[in-house]
Image (cartoon, rainbow, N blue to C red; front, side, top):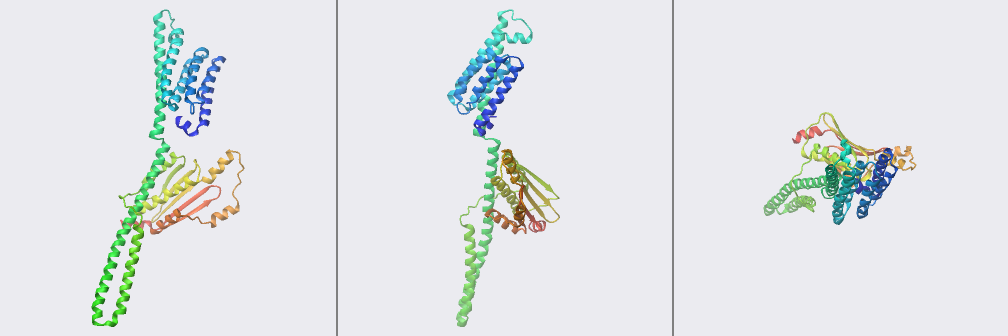
Length: 422
């Protein structure tokens, strides 16, 4: 409730206050007491400003308590609804407002205990006895006061604790965002680790190239002493070797430039389950489907698959509204793997427009034609295609008119490649 009010601001407060008011008014009308509607109206006035002016709601609590005692025939239900006001004021009020709110829980409990317990002998009426003595009236007061004060106090503390949990610990949405950010960081670490491996290979090759230059020049020095006419051939070979070494050095520099090497980070296809849960927390109905018999992949292949799905989900989050349905399908065949990431973002947008009364036109023949001939491009998609090509795969992104987008990644010989590297 508190998270809902925080996210929706005035609209959520209005809806919630109307719900509480109608609930209270319904019980008053059922009991046949039309004066009790005054108490219901006071609840409406107390809840409406609680988000931005909790002090105003606080000032209306004593009035609601008086109306509850004087006009309502459903004091038990009214006390429960009054506790909701205490909880909301404690959640959204300042330190001073919260302190006064706790004092009012005591005052309201005393007032209800006195008028309902001592004067009205509520407890005695509930058990069917007659308040024949002062002792019964006092006992009734103590019981009503203790129960009411305990309930009001728990409501106030619970409201504040709920607010603190949302603000400082984080809602499921906050934790989902944090998880996605963490996964992006892990992907960056893995990318840097790949650069490190490539740099190691290039360094080894560079050492061989430089050694070749040294060997050619040493051999050429002795050859020149014996036959000066070989100078041209010696210089040409030394030049070619030095040029190869320079090329490898340039490649090494490009990989090392602006790279920070970190600890090894591995990604598994099984980690995608946790990722889809995070996206569901964000409001995207994400599911994973798997068909066929999965086979073992090396770390690079697992990272490639994970990267494809992760970036596809990020693209859905970037371009599609909350409520979009996303399906991630893995089709394992005898020697290959196909990955399909499908969403209905366009359909969701059109549905929202229709809900708002806007006119939505259906897709045309031109849309079908564009879906067939149009090729999507972009830095992220190009990087994914390059990564998939390392393992003999190819990636296609297509638009499904009136529905959404589909990304297909096909690795026809993935099992054979994995067997060679395992």
